[in-house]
Length: 119
Image 1 (cartoon, rainbow, N blue to C red):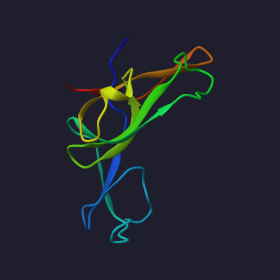
Image 2 (cartoon, rainbow, N blue to C red):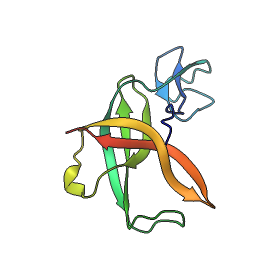
Image 3 (cartoon, one colour):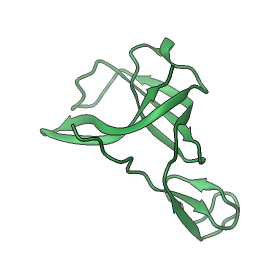
Image 4 (tube, rainbow, N blue to C red):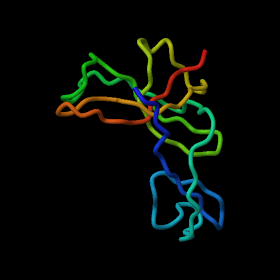
C-alpha cells in the first residue's frame, strides 16, 4: 500500500489567527473574511473520542474508534483511531496522524485520517 500525504487543508484567519477546519465564510472569532490555507503539522493531541458499534456497510470491523485531535499548529480534525480497547486511549495523549484506507465501498478504497496512539 502506498503511503499518501494527509489530504487536509485548514484555514487561518489573517486578522486574528484563529484556525478553522472545515472552511467558514467568516471567522468564528472576529468575523474576518480573509484566510491563509495551512496544512496540519506534526503529531496531534487527542481531545475526545468515541467507540462506534453500529457501523455502516463497508466496514469489516465489529467496532471502530473515532476521535478529534489537535495538531501542533492548532488544526483540529476527526479521524479513525487504531485501538482495540478504550483502555488504550486517554484524553490528552499524543497520536501520530497518517492517511490511509478507512473502508472499502464497492471494491474501491476510501481514504481518510487515521490516528495511531503513541505510547
